[in-house]
Amino acid sequence: MKEMDLHTAIELGSPYPYTLVVTLDKKGKPNVMGLSWWTFTSLQPPMIAISVGHGRYTHECLEDGKEFVICFPSAEQAKAAWLCGIKSGRKGDKFAAAGLTTSPAKAVNPPLIKGATVAYECKVVGQLECSDHTLYNGEVVAVHGSPERPKHLYSIHYSKLISIDCKGNLDMNIEYK
Image (cartoon, rainbow, N blue to C red; front, side, top):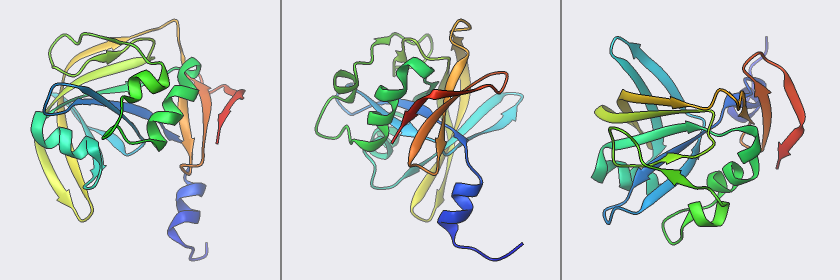
């Protein structure tokens, strides 16, 4: 092994599961952000943590609302998911721009994204300041899925998305840069 820069290491560690995090702003308007920095933190009770940069609009929404839905976009949603990762929702409606539709959640206020492979409704139960990001730990209060859409997206060093199904089969036809 040899010492290397962080960006090279992140690329070599790829792919990372790519998700869309849905929050609400102060006025109740849904916001969606592309995110690869997430992890399960507990199974009893089930919890998922997400890491969000302080300057991000989603950070502002989480500070106000303390709820989020983490959705795994399906392969069919790759173009929309990529747009949600490169645009800010602060001054516009990313749902409309991306052509994503929502449906009501069961236990939290932010909506689900229709057509996602899996969606976890979460209520923030703790947070940790981590330099330029905040790690939000959310208790999973409801889970939804679309078993007929087994392919979801992975990020390669934040430069492109690929699709892999739940059995590990790579779909070379899905790639956004």
